[in-house]
Length: 222
Image (cartoon, rainbow, N blue to C red; front, side, top):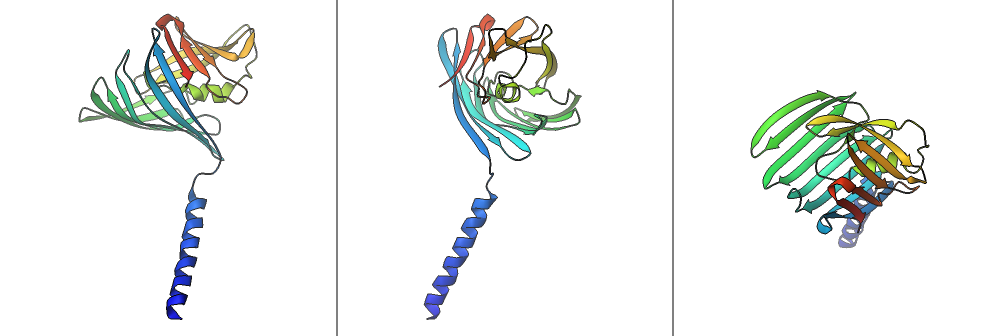
């Protein structure tokens, strides 16, 4: 009888722990994708991403690798944003041209503090940026998904394009503009200086493709 009671109690404990584990997992919309990267007509890499929408938070996680034009391995990339697409945290671990790099960033009220580790050397950089700047580590493309989710196919065609900020983290903040193509609002045209980036999305805000014609670079859903 004692043995049966012990087994029963252990079973109850297991069921309780199981439900506690399930309830502790992030709940909400989740989107997974894989981007194939082409440079000068040759496939040179890929990125696998996961986009999670929680009640007040968006999370983008990325892994991947690239051989050209810059050899790179993305072991872990994470961007956390609030419900207004304001970045809160950033993490990156990987290698660029064979050199190991780690970046950990905290963002609050337009102030970013970057902790950077490169080849065993560590430094901290602080900078003021626009609160809603797009965090774009170079040369990684999945973060453009943030623009796709934010604007989708809802930008109206106006004579003046909308100004946005792109923070090439952790180096420099650049001014850019975004506007829809006149014949298709799901084509978003981003102008960064003389460089045009063409981003194709849909009403759900998926990143269907991204092209940089001047660099003969194309990124598409695999």
